[in-house]
Length: 130
Image (cartoon, rainbow, N blue to C red; front, side, top):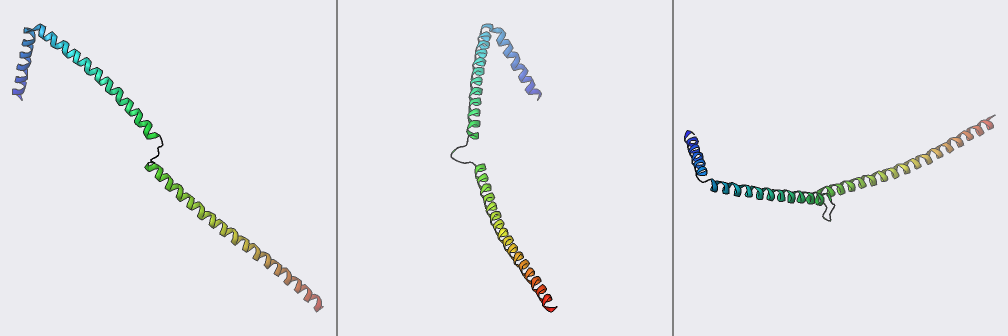
């Protein structure tokens, strides 16, 4: 570790000496570094703009319903079909219950008529017995 630090220190010292020995060359290198930095910043700005555009396009594409239905559409369609089958079963059960209620009402009406006829027959028999 100490060797690395010494080598780094020696390298920095040599670079500083070379920069002081050739000030014009160091200034030219700084300008090229600054120019490259400005170019890189411009490239990064263009890339960020392109990424933002792609992100917007992707968001629009994923939210737009297309011809190729996604998994959520398939799941919703299956759920709707299940609900439709349940409604059909409930409708059939309701019709059966209404028929059974109608049959029970007719049977009750017939039983009431039979009871009234039996009551009338009992009255007639009581009158004849006197």
